[in-house]
Length: 251
Image (tube, rainbow, N blue to C red; front, side, top):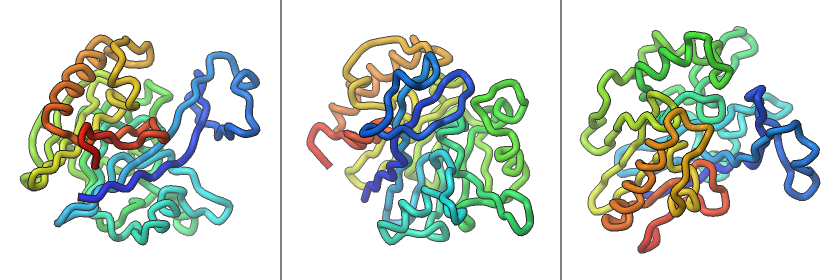
């Protein structure tokens, strides 16, 4: 399998839940609003023998011509939106789900950003995301997915897609967050989304205040780190541009 990180860069976020670009050379974190966190955003493509998989979809930001950043990043590797066959979503917070759909300005409606792909989303996660109670979700974007034939709403807490993509409800970062494990031959790729966001967090036991269940998220990281190192998993880190992937025997 081939792993392609799609870094979108660094951003700050405060209580407004809006992501503001951050340039490490010119910007000063102290000049941002009080309580701002610095985060890095990085979806992944995984190329298997049968699929072009996209794991989470980034912020969905566009340039002055209306071209999505994630589409531009994919094109640098010779891959285009119509090539993606499956989109796997850990959860639907803005920084992970912003690129699920794009606005067709001519029709003034949202359309799938990856027109030939099947989308896999937790049923309960999208229910929570579209109920209007949290600014972490973009209801307008997500609502158009509810009755789309290419969107598969996963009702089970764990299962397998096409015999080699394993999903499991993990419920640490958000109540219905899920992880994915992709197994092909002797290779295992693991994507823990915001419950395994950075290499350093895998090595340090701590409870994060931004997790819905910080203790559970910590326990999951400890478990995954032990099992993954024993079984030579390739870890993918969504919020770690410096170390996007890790395997104790290399990739």
